[in-house]
Image (tube, rainbow, N blue to C red; front, side, top):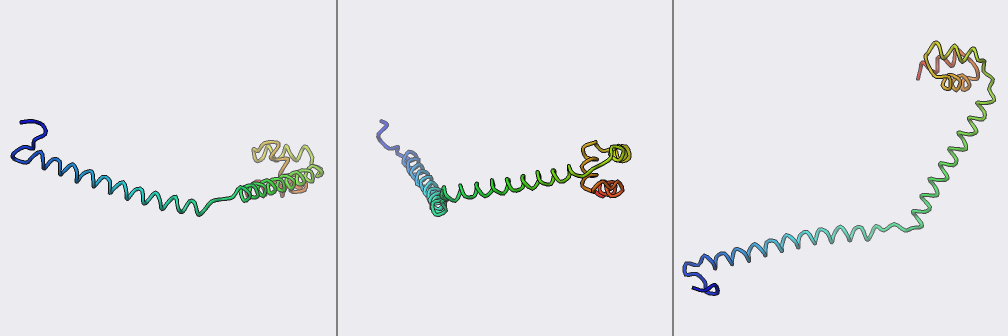
Length: 124
């Protein structure tokens, strides 16, 4: 018997039929996946973002950050104008075990009022 001749009992013919069914099933699964991918790409194409919109959004974020920095610097300058006593800073540091920078900042924010500064630190 040669390789080109089908077997008498038909097992080789049945194997060929099963292989062709398997290939058709694989092609169908591939087609389903391709259809899903096509739907996704169609949606993405409809939702393109222009470079102008991106650059304007980035500019808005930059402007907002600049405004916040300006406000922070102005607030720090105002706080530097407030006179605080070294003894008051040391009192806050010793009583509440906070850093010198934090004690000074809170004391300046409370306009040099030690009691209000202590209350502010405790409440936070």
